[in-house]
Length: 125
Image 1 (cartoon, rainbow, N blue to C red):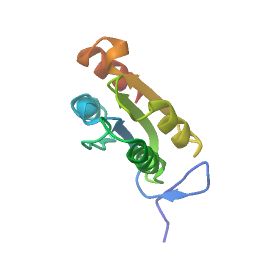
Image 2: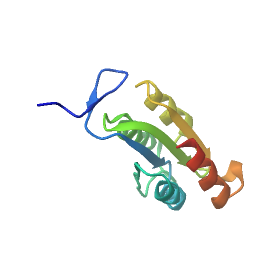
Image 3: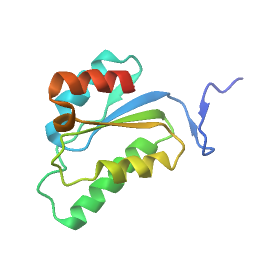
């Protein structure tokens, strides 16, 4: 019997090979979903957090998002930020990158809105 899994750079084994599209804040969910809709093999990991949080909650959220992106069933990650959220897209990206996975970031306000962010996210994925 042959195991049809994927060994990651850090030695972990996954049975899926998804590109995770992870919003940093609930306000970026629609962009994350639109990116994932256009990229076969991708999954949006939506949530409703990331804004108006106290520091201890921000740290929990950052660890949670790092954990999602670090899952062995994830091959690569596209992070989607609005640009004003409390959660640090750089900290989350750096944490996931420690696993050896490619990580790209899209910040909606920096790029110029929904359509441009979706376009860049699709290219990144």
